[in-house]
Image (tube, rainbow, N blue to C red):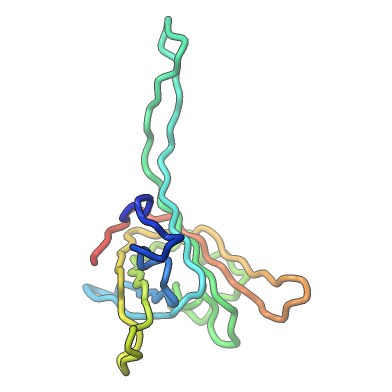
Length: 167
């Protein structure tokens, strides 16, 4: 993923596309193609690397050893009467939201970050960035509702082996 640390977001200049995005489209790999399965309202992709300090004999200052990178994906949306996120991702209508059989299932996904077109074209939003996530494993599923609200939200968290930017 591109580093947005050098952009000037406050003044509105050089704002990265993912900060202006209105929709996120999720596609599931089927054979050699990706099939769009849903839009989500919240998407978080965290990439981290475990850093372990160690102290060589005779040194006061630590050295650091880097471990593998970890990619964590979390997506959420308003729960609808139809299928839940878990059912859509696993392509099953039999899993209820308290069933743990889908946890650990492996998937390959594509994420399209969509931005509304400037001229309100009939084609709808355009894809500004596309990423593929390989070897995703569903780690957790949850639902939540805030006090005073009437909207039930659902979340799915996954770990992935690799993320690749296509455009």
